[in-house]
Image (cartoon, rainbow over all chains, first blue to last red):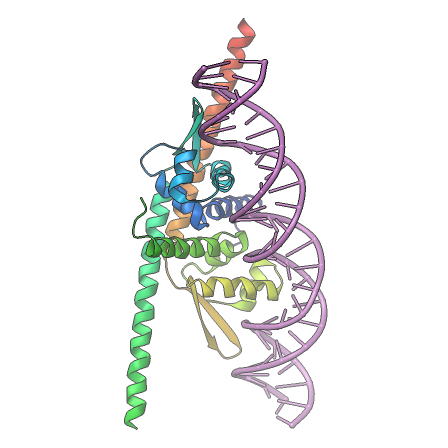
Length: 121
Length: 121
DNA sequence: TAACTGCATCACTGATAAGTTATACAGACG
DNA sequence: CGTCTGTATAACTTATCAGTGATGCAGTTA
């Protein structure tokens, strides 16, 4: 389906942008740390064990993607999740991974079975 | 949450890998074309209007990520969605984007309001 | 067998992105 | 005011990735 085209491509682009912002382990961990509470940058740096510049840059990416929001409070800058949907995405992905693992286990089982059968010949 | 660490990081890595595989407009379109039916490469090339090599490479990425599966049938290779969860992810992302757009509209409204107020001073 | 079709892969290019170090900037405090 | 702390940004290096053209390979057909 070519759909309404220009808008269709734009939508795909925006979805891709969001997914790209999430598609990085450090950023996923940042999102996870922010789940349900407001955390300042220095604490995030401490928890992740990354450089401050690195954490700041990743937070910038998340912010640009609209996944996260921040506010100053004295010297610190506190970040919060902007849209809780990200966790649902993670949950779905975990489900996908589990199902994939199950399939792999099943395939290994089949392979072992056919190997045993061949051995019998 | 330092969680159980090695495994935790591995899980984040696997989630990131899957998201990364999806985080590209052309690949999202490929997934969309495959929604609910089996399609061969030449047809996908035609529908997307990309080069065959490009489509093949993107399909390879999707396949490596376990999002898609293929089987030969004569000269053609037919692809299908391996895990329907991807569409749920897209649906969620669309929801996020809509909410973000709403927020932006609201912010513009506020800005316009404060502008009008300032004009009054 | 040779020629053709459909697809995958290779080698390469340009663009994008992650990580690092150094630096700039904002607010608190003396 | 100067200084310190917390954060963001700049400049750079290295790595990863999308796209292209050429080539290889599998399966079909003559």
